[in-house]
View 1: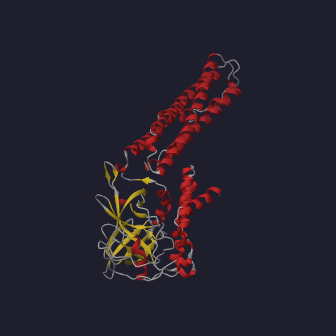
View 2: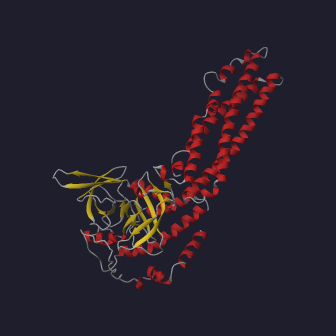
View 3: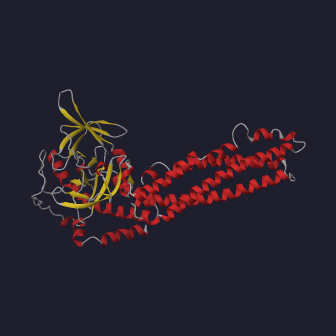
Length: 481
């Protein structure tokens, strides 16, 4: 709590006095002057309109913006301290819809939506492609379509953002989830930018009105005709822009980025546009994207160090999955020829032959398990060496990738110590069984049954470790590199 209060005070001290007044003193809130038209500003047609004074909802958003910045600062502090779960939860809270006061519950008119939305819709350009995005906080963070990204020898190409006024700004990638089709970028020029609240699909249902907002194009009214577990489907009386669109609610909030679109003809013969939003999936991933997660489908977008890290992690996965040593360790103490068959025959062991066979079986199983433990130890040792040797390059990756790399390194170090201890224990067991084969003195039936139970338990241990490692070195943890 002390740290959070300190962050809040620090945030407030960094904000100019004029901003303090504008945010916290209602008597200083003034009707904003009309923006000066730029000679390069795009001309939009379609629904239009403007307000001469901010609404109550806009004034409340001004106040709430400092709280968002504070939560963001706290989340990044949590991330720096190694508490990723807490950081993700803090940023995720910013995406959750906040109950609006009764005065703001009513939907806006078409012209009010246009006036509210247009200033926050931007055009994003790389060397070879363009996309449309929406500014979602006053610092200039923009949600957009993941498909814009291209690769060159220097990495992801530089980004240029064209504001609604026609002014161009440079930007950088914050995070991306290509699987869910969304990216977050940041305008690098400090300033306060007009923005829209990102609520994604919260509150939208079949039959609700929505709008399709493009850059320099009419803002077109649409309607939700289907809501499924995967997202929303909308119909609008307009064709798609080649560079993408943003879907907004009837209150002018961001509902999401279309994941795909297709044209179809309705019964009355009207040509309509179908938009599909995977907004619920976007909402679930945005907290990680905001922390710098970079999840690509096309791996050619990965940098050399990302490719190396992914290769190492995939190597552990494939090794554990296909390792004969681990499989043999699992199978050695299980199957039809198990210790139960020997236990039932120990009562007939009059000349020690059954004891010797029992010991030989235990030695054989222990040898298989020694090989399995040695394999796991070598896998974790090699990965530990790689992560240490490449720590500087990994430290240049996104913050979320760095956190995942640290988590993997911590898990791997713990497993290295664990497998080393198991290898030592199993080696001692094998040597003990070997010595007892030469001389059975002191080898009781109780000893044999206890050791047999131990080895059967070790078989379960190897099976559990195989499952743990296959889970840890696959999926999102590998794909983000």
